[in-house]
Amino acid sequence: MKVCGETLSGRLDFCNLDVNDTKAFTRLGKMLDQKERVTINYFAMPPSTFGAICKGLGEAKLNAKPARVVMEKPLGTSLETSREINDRVGEFFEECQVYRIDHYLGKETVLNLLALRFANSLFVNNWDSRTIDHVEITVAEEVGIEGRWGYFDQAGQMRDMIQNHLLQILCMIAMSPPSDLTADSIRDEKVKVLKSLRRIDRTNVREKTVRGQYTAGFAQGKKVPGYLEEEGANKSSHTETFVAIRVDIDNWRWAGVPFYLRTGKRSANQVFRSRGLLQNAGTEPVQRDLARAAAE
Image (cartoon, rainbow, N blue to C red; front, top):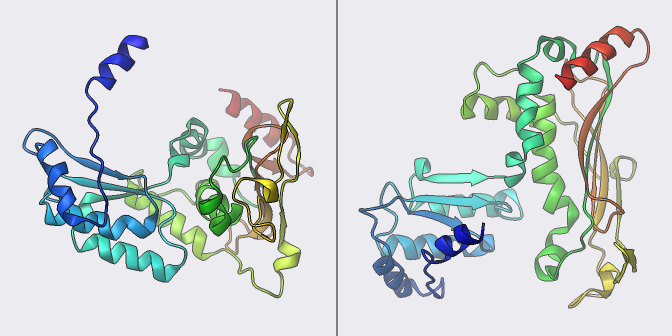
């Protein structure tokens, strides 16, 4: 491992620049020789800077194929700002060069979901409201905000986790079998699930959701501050660090089956779990078969 680290570090170069200074990207261009490699631009930056970065790359002629752009959430804070970001990126990169990713989809457990659901006839034939009583998706984190107050207090746990990571997992659990396993077919089935979500608004939000903040206490044997006591904290902030939500899907497959999504920071244990609980009546043989299939 040490040898690998030394080899890798010997191939690293750094270019310090201001993303709002388009001329500075010329220095970056001199460091890169696109004729010899495929350049992947991974935006580990606030989404508000994506437009300026793409402009700089474009003016420095660093946007020519096969150069690629990788963008991770959050892509804006609303539909309007998301469209603005995508339009701005589209001025300098073709759609085939743009990759929007969710790193949670790379977790081994999530990657196994598609195989578990669609490669085993027991799950294909029993994965719906006839046998499933409810579904739980839980992501509990032992850590706090880890010095990210500036970002996190604007986003909160709902935007940081629910609207992207947990909804992606929900879609993979609830989607119908795609016509094939291509990215487009899987995406289309996910969209169908999202369009079937029952709306949560001001009339039912108190019934469907729970929000909270972690307070001071002990984690892994060490004293830790509460959310409002973190460095740089706004003492009057109401931003949630824990959220639980009941989601209902109005389609034939999941009618009457609640999905419970919950996630929070400073939890007692680190947990990443998704499970479907079977109904009691008449499901003993199915439950036994599903348990056997899951163990294979």
